[in-house]
Length: 404
Image (cartoon, rainbow, N blue to C red; front, top):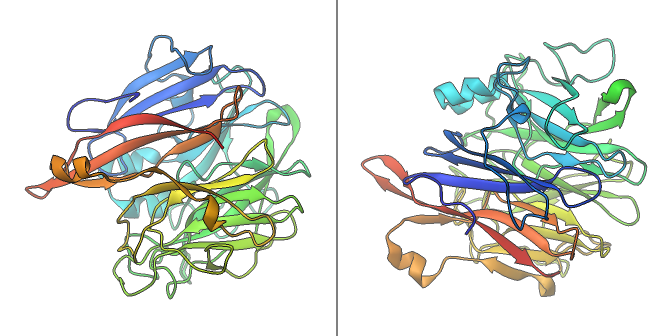
């Protein structure tokens, strides 16, 4: 266990590398007492020895940009560009809108993307500005194609929606749109909790450490396949240059629909995408997966791994979010190799007898250890039970190590 947080909360913790080389890491601890809303901080700290020990846990500094130009930015875990060694932050502007109200509809109309760049391991930001697509037609009010601030939104999914750098040197960032109707206003096509389309930011470094941004074509959500559209995309580049996108779906409100992960493929570096299909095993058989994030992880051993939830029978919306598994992606079919799938964690008899409630093994962060090649996963064993109409959290944050 890494972090237990205050009683009655759901603690979260991550550690990430801060530079292009070396083993300096920055750790971050947060906790919630209601779903999707950060309600407190356990502080930030640095490690000089690859996470074996940590310095003092201080309150967040530059990463949170409190009081700056983008007060209220909600940053996801940063990513180091292996080409430049720069630490790239991406997050949602207007985050305070949701923190204050807790209503998903406020996200769906008001979030916009912000990026930051650090060259000193996250101690300060050399750049912090909105993501605006290049071209005269785009402004702070209309920053990207299909996005008008105040009508619909764009933001990142979960920690699986991290950038990748292609062999051509472009940086691809998987993003999600709330779907605009004919009048540009957010439209929930599927009737679930929310509805999204997916796309990819395509970035190249410009002058003064700023990024020149393009946007791929939109991967539109299909309410006949997923009541929440296609959400929280994750990316990997195959050896032949094809880009695989795997997305979260949902059968929320329509339990008769099959619960799957969904995928599409780009053959031109992320600009255009194939028809979306259910993602499954390389032997042609499908698997069930709840509405939860997942991660494609390209390893230095040349293999591509997928981390996420697979369940034995058709899920209902978000549940069950266990077991948590890892498996290898076949580079030709771009499907999961059944024989390689192994369990990282799942619900145990002790969990069932504990009375703590429903178990969620999701919202994790994973990366390759630079010293030994282990796959490291930071994940909260999150329990919640309903008491008098209120969710009570009893959880702990753990660090798992998997030898690939």
